[in-house]
Length: 258
Image (cartoon, rainbow, N blue to C red):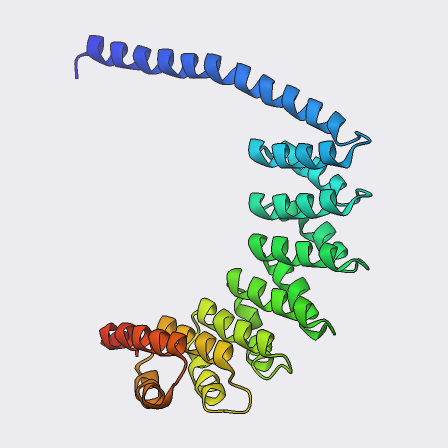
């Protein structure tokens, strides 16, 4: 390449970078100004103003706003605390795992549920560790949310606890555990899922639906024969539809997925 052309190209790059810097600097300054304004609003006497500030910080998606959101976890109003937890989860703020885990000890169920959802969104090892401990909660609603969060976070270390949750006393938790095992993608789940499917005492409609969906997702052809057998006797139309879809997926699965 001629030196003159190289120099011209290099100069063009420099000009573009310089122009981008000129455009970016005001944006950064504006975001800092916005955060300062929102930080002030987090101290407003009106909880609705504080909640709106939390949501606005989330929309900025600026890492500098994480500390402000963490502080909002201690707000006096439930709505603000819940909004802060969910916003931290949506931002995937790893820095917030410890304060969110602490929130799991709150006396307020909504606080705990918000923290569970947020930790599931973040999905780090520490988040998964905190969630697994909650599977022993006396609250079925809390266990159900925890199971769903573990599946959504793809927490591999939660495999055994989730298998154990298939025998939970509440059908809602059993159904969510079945779905979560499908989310993990670990084919070791096929046998316990099939065992649950054959347990007529515990496999309610919702539980069977969760099991069938996960078997289809896991793609293990060992599930084809049991599902074909179930299809002949299943009376619930929604479950029948899910069986048909799962069978379609399983039959189309490649041999190397066996």
